[in-house]
Image (cartoon, rainbow, N blue to C red; front, side, top):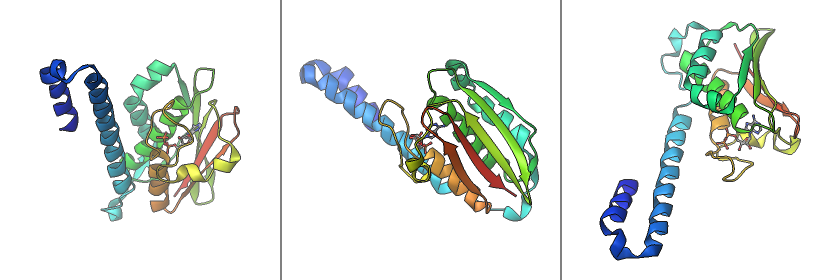
Length: 201
Ligand code: ADP
């Protein structure tokens, strides 16, 4: 409503409002857009890893979840020229939509926080006792050790407007993985790329 009526105001009354009004209305429209994205992401966060119907969790093929995540990301993959490769992926006891969301957020970030080279992203997994440990690695800008924990918090961001985002993507991943009794962490250094790990049953 805010965005739509601001646009209408500009079209219908722009001439009467004077030259500054164009800029002010642009700020309102952009602000409304950011508010909408923030609300969408907060809603995703509130619902993240919801285990309703958990009694019926079946094993799902992580390779198919990755296919779905890549399909959802295909526009950014094409735009960034990213190469995404994979090792062998297991079946895991998760809701498919949850694994898709986690992989999509991690791969999306790997492309967004790219370095000077085109993104090269590898998704792999290995057995750790009763758990599967997934790894999503990239050749991006990397993250200084001081921030390795705090980036998983809600609204925690290391960047301003040069990289768009709401600071909720990793918090959604952490909440989802923790609902399954797993954990998520990052190994990274500035300029050396990042590898995000998560473990699930
Ligand atoms: P957003 O991307 O919306 O800011 P996220 O919760 O997904 O929010 O990420 C939090 C912060 O962690 C980002 O602002 C960024 O600074 C850092 N980050 C996340 N993924 C990567 C990555 N693959 N490489 C470098 N930095 C990253």
